[in-house]
Image (cartoon, rainbow over all chains, first blue to last red; front, side, top):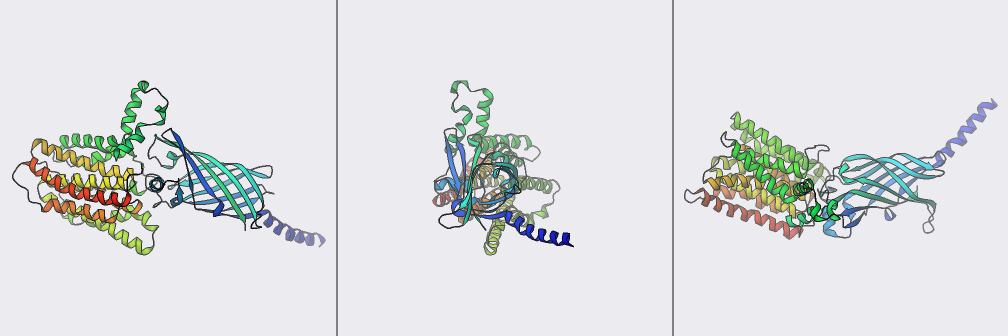
Length: 189
Length: 300
């Protein structure tokens, strides 16, 4: 009798604790900008970014697990030159009319101690999905002094080949290797 | 326009830091094949010229169109159809159109010509399907119907030219292809531009044979169907996904009609072809000009 009461109490306490342990966050679009850089004819490295990003993150530090889902609006690409952005949105590159979203869905989050160190997942560009590992270069959680909300921030990066995703326009003159950098802030739900 | 692309292509990173006198022959050849003017101009022209010359004895010189187009697809893109994007659907439709035209001509299924515009309209909706699905229902219907109508009108228009002098179909095809390609290039898509230019230069090769020999060269539906289908679908996708204005399509659609209605003087194929080329290129030039007014200079 005592044993079963103890078991019920233990389950009753453990369930909410485990639910608390897995924290869920929503990506803050005002402070999240995926960047990319690519060689331009071998002369310079052009930088670009996407202005509209959404998604969610869950993190369970105790269990050392988590998940990441990011959706990037393809048409929000911005390189600081409107004519180039138009071209990037067109069928030669991101094909925004046909593929309005670039997405990243994690399959595993790897930890180093208490901190996430890398994320395995699938990146989908122009309808082609390929496994991409994001290396987490910086990670910090705390209370935002302005909004007083629990917030996590991270910088993650990866190197991809655009030709793997069928984006082959201008090869080899315009570089194939693309460096992706995700600067992310996420607010606890 | 292609001059700007030439700058991109000729400055491949592999040779940026290499002495210019030490470029291996294979690299030079690859550089040449990467050149947009070769991919969308010289290669389809030569392929079409050879095919038209080889197959004219068996009255299949119309194969020149799909041969020229295939040469450009091979050099500028690929024959991979996964995922099946709109531009890949254009390639697939062009190949299927050529096969269907061959079947109709060989088996003399001429009654099928009445169904071709309807079939073309359905192919247009299928090609643009993923883009249309992103739109509000009203826009989806408007754009879908307009695309289908444009492709249907081009197929019908080019098919009616088959009853007349072969010169008319070749002239209209040259202007329609080059007009579509140049407008798509200005409207911000190099690949779609190359598709249009490829069929235009292929039709030009067919026309050149007639001008040089001063003799008519029957084109057949193998010439008109894939040409109208590829030109129509390319322009539609350029409108939906880039900055080609819809009214440029209205001008391009007039080319087969104008070429059909103009009376031809005398018997000289050369003089007739020059007259037809001047007339049809006036329409093509108008479409390119209107696109340039909207889109401005090419961004690449």
